[in-house]
Length: 279
Image: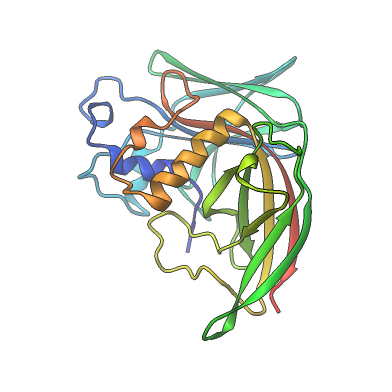
């Protein structure tokens, strides 16, 4: 199975009934889902908006990929034009990536997408501080001896909450990339003195109803805890609310995008990872 990496893009399928999402537009808006993470290459997915009646699948998805844009990332004196790449393990399998530039904590990154005579822009910052994963432990699952429930405690960055956002991901040995939890993004002031999160296994999209929320005994699980740029963090927190708690057909087009001239989000993250074997 290919891993569904781009979550915004499939979500936007369900808000396609708005006039902004019709294929009849002369210049359809560019949909952006981009990330830059500490010590990692930047990755940017570009698509065209879906229509409610469009058929989406492993083969037809390619029809919505925007493969003709010029994508540029700038930070201080660094500037790189991104390379269009393919990874058959991912869905969508096409994305733009830096080849040299990697994310650095505390730095700000300007994204520019030039397509069809228009320029789409965004700015994000990789937070200067990273959290720490203090501890991880398991609890038994009622009436299930084959799985365990995983919990993680991470270190606070402030004592009174200062607008920090945290985003949590998991990956097992069967997966080639990290997946966010169904409810993955939290403001720091959501918590009390301890930040403890139940690490349900991340599904491959909000449409995934087959993935168990628990981890099988014997699994090797990699947990990622990310401190997220506050503007992008608020986007992802509200996105979680839409897809996790509410009707995904409702207000998705009102998410607070940081993309000027387009749709979606450009996210800076400062991440740490820790591995555990389910016993």
